[in-house]
Amino acid sequence: MSDQSGSSYLVVDTNVAIKWYLTEELEDEALSVLEVGERGDLMLLAPDSVEPEFWNVLWQRHRRGELSLDEVWEYWDALEESPLLMGEVLPLMTLVTRIAADSGCIIYDALFVALAEFEDTVVVTADQKLLDAIEGTSYAKRGVHLRDVTHVLPRL
Image (cartoon, rainbow, N blue to C red; front, top):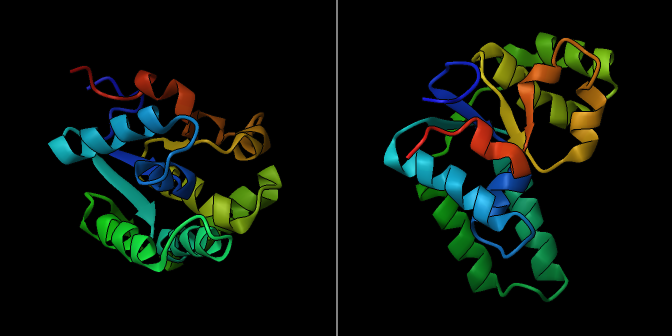
């Protein structure tokens, strides 16, 4: 395993999981994360708040006429069937608050960083704003941009 932390987990941000189903920039990199999870090389993990966030992205796309309601349900079902495990957020809230206070990031983003910290791994994200927020903090090592994901994925 080449993931930099040695953990068997990889935390996945919502903006990565959505790329598993929607055509977006860095879709291929996101699909490589999903493939690693499907093979069982790493266990993919996200805070359980990822579900309403994911649903909200789909719903916004539906409201803009970009997705049919059938597609919304199809992608939701696909996420539910994916290898993404959900981590409980409530036990992490003290750490989440500390991360948000130290970095200035929003609580929703701090949830992913806290889960990565707790599991001694990294969160893969396409959110440069999050990575900028944690830069210069003790949590900077917990974030990896999706474009650099090959650095933390096991070799084939």
